Every structure is written in C-alpha cells, then in structure tokens.
Image (tube, rainbow over the protein chains, first blue to last red):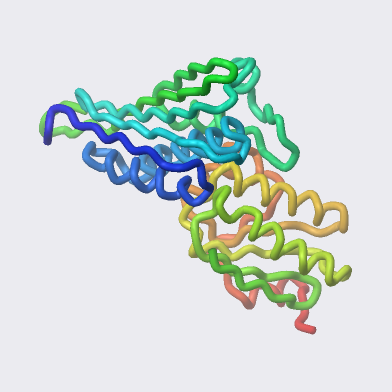
Length: 147
Length: 118
C-alpha cells in the first residue's frame, strides 16, 4: 500500500452529487482496512457534510463543493469545503437536533461526530465553511499487530 | 429511486429501491403523502427497505415527518428489513423508538396485523 495518497474533486452543489461524493470517499477509503460498518460510517458522515454544504452553505443555490481526501499513516482525512454563507455559531450548529429549517432533522453534525474519530469545522460568515473529519480502521490485524 | 406504493386495506405498502438522501427525499415524501391525502382511511404505512442500502439525515427527516402525520391519524409507520446502516442511523437518531421495525418481513404479515385487502 502507498505511504500516502490523496484525491481532490470539485462538483456543483447539486443534490445528485451527495450520493456521488459518499461513493467516491468510500471507494478511496477502501485502500485502508476499514470494515463494512466503518465504511458505512464514512459514507454517512460524508453524506451529511456534503448535504450541509448544499442546503446550508449554498441554501440550494448554485455553488461549488470541493471534496478532498487523503490517507497518511493509516488515517483517512476527508475535507468538504464550500464558499457559501458560513455558519454564525458553530457550537450551536453542532448541538443535537439543532436545525434552521423545518422538515430537517438537525442530525448532520451529530452523525459526523459519532461516526468519525475527529471533526473540525472552520467557518467565516459570507466566505464559507470547511469540515475536516478523520478516521482510522479499528481492526488490529493480529499477524502484524498494527492498526 | 424507484417507489412502488400500493394501498392494501387500511395500509400503504411501499417498496423502495435506492439510496435515500436529499436527492430523492422529496420524491418519497410526495409519493406517500399523495396516497395519505387520497385515502383518509389509511392508518399505517409500511416501507419495505430490502433494497435501500443507505439512509442519511435527509431521509430520516422524511420518515420522521410521515411518522408524525400517521400519529395524528392514530396510525403508525413501519420500516421493514432495514439495512445495517439504516438501522444504525435510526437508532442513533432515536427514530427506531418511534417507528415499528419489522425484520424478516413477509407480505403475509399484513393479514396477521389485521390489515385486510380491499
């Protein structure tokens, strides 16, 4: 396996690209020894981050979402970037069932936090938001003793 | 997403195929609500999810909304054969405590549940 690897993709903020982005990240993440439930977790977290960029960042208007992922030292990092409206209060946005829209669940950040090892959000009003998440496979292979 | 929804007695049974996210959440919402608006006698909705490998919070929001609509009618939402991923997010969101989850779904179960054809 390569020591490090990365992908960088840009796509318009279309709902159809939510499924594309989680499939892409899942396929890339498969270079590490993630279990199927772990890949489901990565797919879910990616889906939430990209949905947030489209719904909240761009408020369903046209924009560009940048997806970066890399693998370094056995750890997957996924970064979702938008140049949308930004988040006023990141701590409030991360609260369980916080939502600014009726008919939404307010669970996006909850899933990202629950399913990934780390979640880091940077945002500036009027400039955009970037969400960075990391995860490493939990499975320890007995023959090598490494994760 | 492919949705085949039919009215069976006092229930809607909808077979869904595809991953459920913001790209098709509105489609699922509309297809169920159309039948609920059309037939006031409908109490329960069964979503057969064998072929739904993935649901995210956009999909869960539609399920929660239908649960609330059915609750107002004195009915219930049932999710049959959820994938491991769907079960996990339903549990984490608390939705699994509100909806009925049916494993090993069999169409004959409808008769046992008192839903008659007609």
